[in-house]
Length: 166
Image 1 (cartoon, helix red, strand yellow):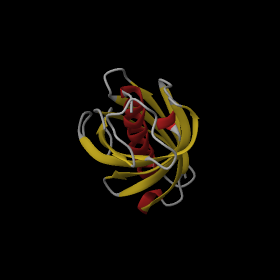
Image 2 (cartoon, one colour; image 1 turned 120 degrees about the vertical axis):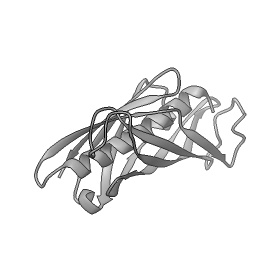
Image 3 (cartoon, rainbow, N blue to C red; image 1 turned 60 degrees about the horizontal axis):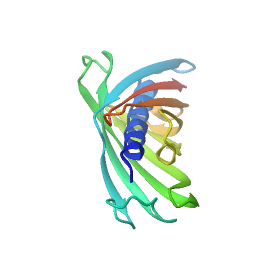
Image 4 (tube, one colour; image 1 turned 180 degrees about the horizontal axis):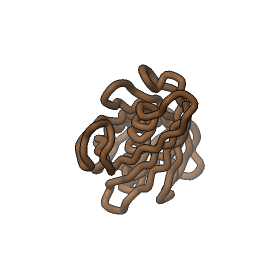
């Protein structure tokens, strides 16, 4: 897959972490915002060659691991501290052209005291900004919902703003 797609996946992962942080920080009936930065993600191709310039086939998937770092002081840790990770799997469901397709991505963001689940299609667009839905969680995030806005940088890093509502 192209570097842009992996950058998008990295950004998605960061967004997932942000979502988790927002859920953790949120009190009942409140909205919280968390901010994260992530280095380039680690990727694994499933069902296709990662070195191919062709778009993955229908049924092919990509597994991603993203490290979450605080963009600001949160979770009792300073800006820049590693506070979690995001694991995402994206599955190709439809081939639009030989170089593009669509599908669904599901993930989990692990934070200091629980995790949140996310869903979106960020890996299937080359947009500089991707949006993810927060679909649930465990621990303090069990009743949270929200969104993640991930900004993908040309160098493969990303930043995310997570907005959670409980």
